Image (cartoon, rainbow, N blue to C red):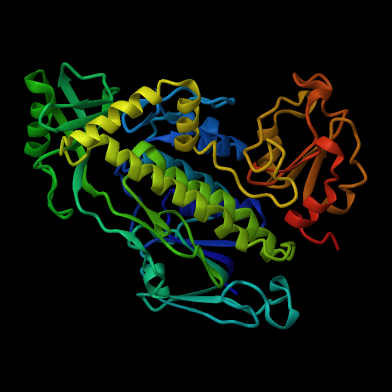
Length: 509
């Protein structure tokens, strides 16, 4: 084997995954077909759950230190949403994707991983070696015991890389997905809209979404500042006449015409930094796992990038998969652990596609101004004024409401959700304790000190002494937290943690 895991694609998903694999103790090779990192902003927002995940790896402060990244109010179909509970409660920060990629690349380089660029994948072969396509070993042999199985990737220059596992993070037009001949069902794009990074002059509109009577619309979001400190905006334009073939270049005249149509002559274009046409295609791969090959990010799901959900969903794919692959290559993965990646992330991706389709309908992004659509939007806007509805929508958009199935502990309100970032006094915060990439058992009453001993090489414990002086005191609930920050067991009602420890962290022998 050349490496434990080959990651194909060095965007935010691929680089996040490479970092997670390193933290989990797996050797990693990261390749990309491009000769250099893109300087285009592409995505422009980081959601609450992603902010938390970055904090769990010590990346949040470095990210916020990269520049002035405004906090922007989240929205659902253009309807503003409230703040979310938690330490990083604001719905999202406006951080261009190019900034995130630069941060992640520096972080990987500091840990000894350098992206192998100009690597254009042309061939892929995986050998069974006793492992079925579902990832379950034949003849009673555990997947971890099969040491000679692997994947061979061939590149255009004739080089090969052999790895135990391969992860496709190579985007919406994934080469890996094509080589697998994997079904990618869904709806093809029927319309396009313009997305651009701009500097505006005159009366720079502050409203995030604006519609005209004849169906034209524009959305504006803060995008930080340029090197001279001048504010940048993400501009999205849609409506009658805007839908052109995806390959049609976007010109400055297109932007000026759109601005004039929606905002009048008081707003004008000073600089066009980047523009493209995006479609409303909505697709999701049927299986996130194909033997020893996994798909993540846009390689697994594509949709209209509303509410900064595309990049964030891919990053969450990476946080979910990384620690599980790490456990597998180190021989610690319990039976079925790798299959939980599909079981957990496929429904999460499907939920994103569902809410994006609903938003695109309510936003009338085609500019039809159909009475039925307008009536539905008016009713929905009224509903969205209700606090419970707003909180529900904010949870959907931010990723904070994603709840994973946790066998045996489903009834507890915390189980399956991101762990609260409790201040544990002398021990620090929960997010700080998760930076080791290990599991974490909070044991405020000292009840489970012996129970966790067999797993002490992969699970840390904070007992009553570590909670001294904390804000929560002994009121903190006992809970077991996975390396990706999700609660997989809570001790209310006298339940024991050993079944959850074995289920998620394997046989301690």
